[in-house]
Length: 247
Image (cartoon, rainbow, N blue to C red; front, side, top):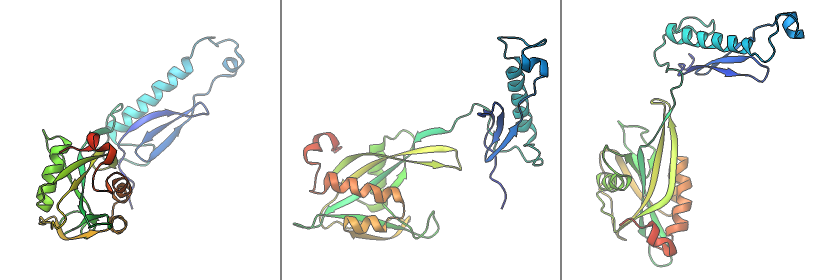
């Protein structure tokens, strides 16, 4: 199995005074330039108060980094295509990219809540996995607008009440080198409501919160169920309703 592509090449200091040339999953030790005996003793040739050796070393590291990026050659491991390398100083982006919307209904007096779980169909990502309503925030949309749209598209529901769960999920997308942030919502529908599935899903089920958490494939969705039950287990936001209720 080949190594992952290098997405960055940069010089990193080490505790020993040298540093490494880091590129993707590769870190290559660059030895610190040796001082002459006179300079180590502070004798002739020494320049008190100067850091010329460090400066020379830093220049050498930067030169090696530039050469590695331009040629695709990284630390003697052969020539590799430099495609995918990003410039020094580039940073991973962070974006509010998706929404998670948990669909809830009253399960009856003294029973509590039902949570909707959806199974992804064939032909898309993660076929056979179970999830909540999830989707991308389109350009120009707010997270609230995206939540309502995705709910309508994936289930046909217009909620009786929509709540901000006051929870923000995040995960790293290695394909785009982006940290995606995910605001979380809870949507209440009628006690006898049944979803109208889109082509994304091929099955749905109403489950008790503990069963739903066990069914969800993504750990973040399992964890979110605990907050949802704590906040909305009695059918609303309780003392926090005025802050958490969206519509």
